[in-house]
Image 1 (cartoon, rainbow, N blue to C red):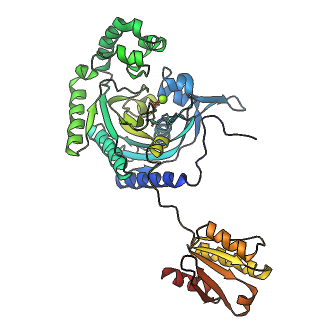
Image 2 (image 1 turned 90 degrees about the vertical axis):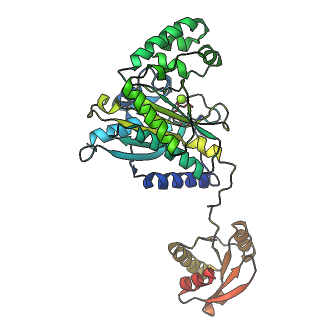
Image 3 (image 1 turned 30 degrees about the vertical axis):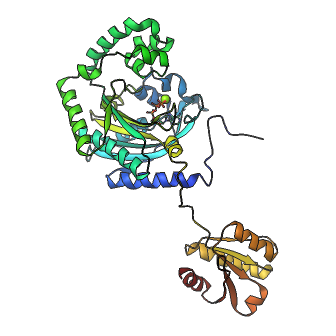
Length: 418
Ligand code: ATP
Ligand code: MG
């Protein structure tokens, strides 16, 4: 028997209602804040991700699903959405009328990581991006939206961690003092970190190996190296969050694995998910639009880990699963043909319906109606048809009424309303 690919999963009925609820809540909120949906492809040229995410990142180094197609073009299943949204923003000149644009997208991402709880090879993200605003107020709005979304979904154990990554003007200063510090603790760092220290020292701050975390306990804070403008923008962010009553933690070790981030960077963490504690991450990536061949326009955004968010609220009851309104039971060929037509008419009228399409006894059809937890059963038999009426049985009270066949859907609707 053929099984799922490792690290992939099915989201089955029973679970999917929760996913629908999260998606609906997020979409309503984002649209209220002026974000428009954009849908981008699941595959892009490998080059797009290599250039935007950066060759030295875990994602590009070892996590991408990359393969040549039949003509030899190198393609990659998207590991994240930002690169594609930026490509689209540039390709369709979405900045032409107004550089300020807000987009969101929801869909699957692919990374070949070691599968474990909260870490899959196909996972889902909810992304939001704001283009064309260089003020940290845009970053504050994104963090506010995240905090509001979690509150609306009754997720309480979440904290917003923020940091600034500086800009190309001040980051080199920090990298220098960071390198100095790292040279001093070199022997205590893992092999990966020793390699990173040369190519991308910021990434050492992000290492998850406990010994590395300990070794860099006393690392200097990038916040002490910020240029005046980066410092001012970080103050704007903090003040805005305070005025919006969004608590935050300044975390000097918070950096993003992606090269194009600058200034504000943030992560929403929870104490409820064990090792995979980040439910959302984001920040400013002012250099990316230009790097990918577009105009020099700033941008900022976030990605929510949909799977982790769903795990956070999996235990709470979701009652948006609809209960079946009517089960149509029929006896005999002629009745069944009519029952089928009426079922379609009920469905069209927004009445949730099921019927038995095979030739079961009335008793077993009633059993199925109970199994579906149908509110009513409509019983259609040859006798009833002769009398020009069918029987509607209320499954809870067991009351039965006769309903004229003429204008059946209307008649049933009227009965269901009471
Ligand atoms: P992590 O540090 O957990 O590997 P990341 O920094 O790689 O996360 P981002 O690229 O910032 O993650 O993606 C944003 C969010 O997407 C993460 O905060 C997380 O919730 C989710 N996410 C990332 N990778 C996975 C995965 N393999 N499976 C499930 N969710 C994921
Ligand atoms: Mg990762």
